[in-house]
Image: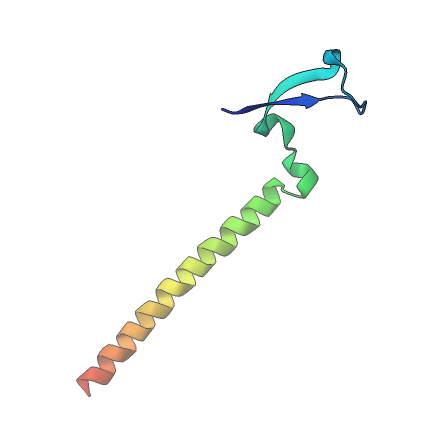
Length: 71
């Protein structure tokens, strides 16, 4: 896992006492970007619905093409 040296204070240059090593997961706060459990559930539901819709459309088109070939 990659680690980054960050400054935990707003001082420039950063004092050595305020420097710490952190990973990307520790630095990013997903809630800050609006990513919540509800948003993840919505995205998953939309993705599942799109895949299911595509399957059913393909199935119906296949049936229609089969009926047209029989005629």
